[in-house]
Image 1 (spheres, one colour):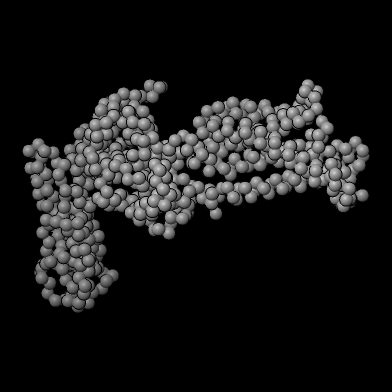
Image 2 (cartoon, chains in turn brown, red; image 1 turned 90 degrees about the horizontal axis):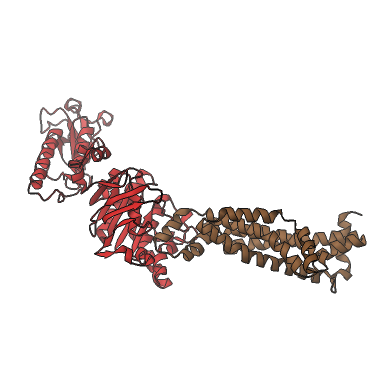
Length: 221
Length: 380
């Protein structure tokens, strides 16, 4: 049996489409974990990135925090926190948020930093407030890069959210972990396929967001 | 500006006790080599840079006392490379300040469209984005954006230095035309002395270290540089350039050596002239010819000598007339009217006499002690 047979068998089994262990339910859980982690990481990383990028101060601190956060192993953190605080949503959210912050923070900082200084000078000389300069001059031009940072964070979170299953939570990781435990490779491959598909959908969503939110003057077409 | 100084924390002095009286409704040009503090001086006027010492007064009010955003919104600001907002359309770029000070969307757009016309931009460009425009067009948008809220003061920081010479000349002419119509108080920074002389009503030459070398109308700068630094900065041919300020209207023209191509071979009016100017049936100049080449009765266009660029008496300056005479192998300048028809020719000797006379007149005006500010400025 090859991988395609596994995939076919997994998705054609009607039992996999119903109930609390059905694909719709697991997908929903997975999307929930992803959105929650991404939302928290954005709430932390985006404002700090915008502010440090705009003022040009704190760049070294941003780089330090990002490097340190990247060095933390998500899985190890999950187990550690689960041991300390017990099983629940917290041990899952902490590693996912820490995973998602560096790409958002660093890319946003770099995106705002790299905006051409002359429109900023012109805006300031016209009497625009600093907040106006950041949100109406710098951010619209930096937006494609900011979105790419959010996109890498989202893809990483989608893939890594499978670890939620280790602490008895749901999500697509359930299939992979249970499948490995039960030596049910059909389930493992099916779960992996779902994760890959969800990552692709995420890519598509960010592409659409870019088309919609970025000005044609910045996209240059 | 009263004894204004800008000193940076590391001790560098960018502007050193600078005092300037900038005239209303005129173009004042700050010019000097790089690092002379001209841009810093400009940026102290809208407080992008705060002076360390001294005060800047606008109509008697200390600029330092006003809220900085209010101050900046009352002054147009144009920079090198225009600094347009690439995510906004041309119309929305121009409408920036009107929108900031609370005009409605419709009114701001209408104002923006009006300004596009004023700076010579086609209305169809309004919906485009900056990257779709040439450098010269972008700079026009920059000027329109600065004028949008009709500020009494316009600050321009090397606005035309990033475009090619032909486009730059167009932009300069356009600025002079707009200034004729609007009469703004303009402070203009450049490192190009020719641009300063062309645009300035008053020119402030600054030297490295942020000190004022000379503050004078351009004609006086050329005739009477304050010191060696100013003289060097003006360049080698300031005598020739000064002729730009002398009108060519008084030149005595002669039609003696002018002959029509269809009448070639007929005895010329000025017998004995070494060269004759041949024109076509519409009196447009074709070129110079030796009298003996014309007797054949036909004109061989290939044997005609170039007549240079003709000048228009009254519109052009003595500099243009002299240039035309020097370019012509015959040593004579060709004068034409606005329609390009020959009105006469004038020799280098006659132009030289006119230059001497102009110098004498200027000297006579200067003697009463009023300065030479009232020399009429004509197109170079």
